[in-house]
Length: 116
Image (cartoon, rainbow, N blue to C red):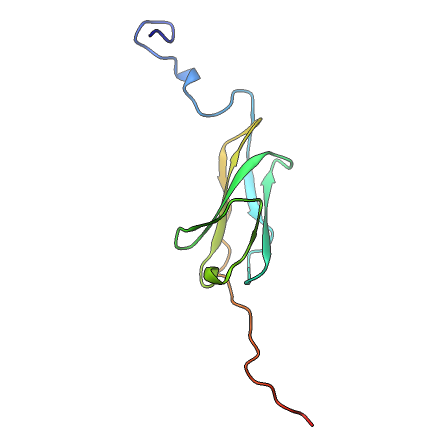
């Protein structure tokens, strides 16, 4: 098989994973840095309107979601969350958000006092 200008050599230009002429993702942020159980977090990627895949992770390395938005679960308590976004279609590159603070659980009422 011959690829490139000389037999036995391959042209590196055609071996790259980025899309020629595409637009590179520049950043991603999470709309709230102090999540609680039940809250929905949304990733905001730049440039706005970019098509991409999303992978949400938590502090122990577990993948917990694969959409633009993620609803915080009880198993996330005590862990930070972040999202990794990879461009698709006319967009390329991979960007990672900053980590949130550790997820807080919801407060539960444990005692009710009759005030009458």
